[in-house]
Image (cartoon, rainbow, N blue to C red; front, top):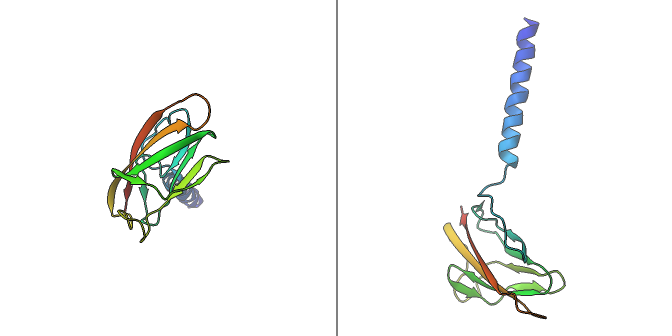
Length: 129
């Protein structure tokens, strides 16, 4: 009888470990970002809530043009000292007032704002649930 309790305990630990692994695993595909792009959020392939903020982190010295679903984003906040852009839809935005459920495509086009030009682009998609 005690061995059954031991097996039951081990089974519960195994189920908990699997559940924790699934809960902490990253959504989406694994993508290597181009050199000046340090990170993007949401990541490519992520499933996110409608309150999500778009964040793009570039190396310092780079500036970006941002397009969401083909529309230019002109009102993103940008911190030059860190190279981080942040944007989310708002009721005052002329084209995107909120994230609609479904897939969204973000395209960034960057270049240096000092020194030699280093133009490039990157595009990814994520889903709003």
